[in-house]
Image 1: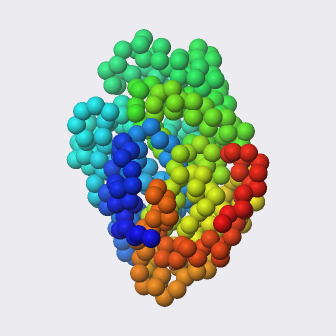
Image 2 (image 1 turned 90 degrees about the vertical axis):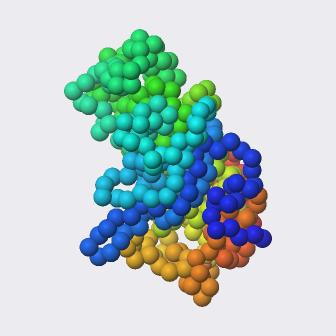
Image 3 (image 1 turned 180 degrees about the vertical axis):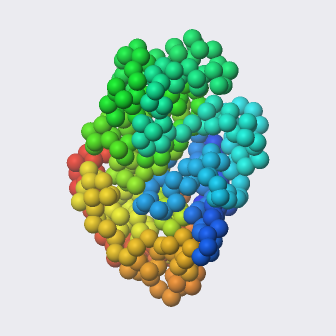
Length: 361
Ligand code: SF4
């Protein structure tokens, strides 16, 4: 059993996979009257080229802040510190936090694109969808005709009728169609990375699932790296290659999706999964975990989960746990992870790979 200060130590060592994002010691703080509010706490993580990474956490865990940090788009007066390095397919590495506004704007659409929840607020209601594509292409000096051809291809990849959608105003499309049109728009400049923050949360379950299937196809066809941020672990488990679980503004567990779902090592992840009767139920329909998420101005000492953790000891109250290797590519920040298998049992019926009941160890 080996412990590491950060996930970066473990990802550097355990794999020679091609890293596209290197996040190191990254924090986001806000100065508030009652003290400093830390909404991302010294996070270090590698994201691999062409992977789908699911970032999972309850509301207020810091997961959306992580999305904003990846694009250096933290809203003021938030302060982003640390290092975020982007490695393009070709050319020199880019230190995101050193870029000026103009360079960031280019990077944000052409290399790293982002889709938020609620397409309606992303579209201008007075403009047809076609105009949104044209303005984006113009702003980045791209040829309109070539760009619109690519837009048509993307729209049909997303099972939309291209001309009908391009000639519509946003309100003439259903919520699911708008969200798919927004995904097409985010990809029109052929970025390598798509960051999605709760992109399907406003949609019904059927539409959520079908968008995920389409997303999987797009990822393969265009060699995309996808960072999918959600409160809904069951939803993303079948899509993502890896899951990273956030609690109290830091990652507490990361590993391959199957491994996390079947064999979670952190008591918080196990508590999340314990309350899921099967993977068809979203987290917000689950029994909540007792206690409440920490106040960012007043985060507990030691392991931030200790006030809610059934396995907490004095060591947990005093010492912030390092990351422990569960397997070569699975890490959890918990002093007592070995006990969690027995003491926090759960069973899941995996919707991702068949209907078999899987008993966790
Ligand atoms: S370190 Fe202690 S309090 Fe934190 S999750 Fe592990 S057992 Fe629970």
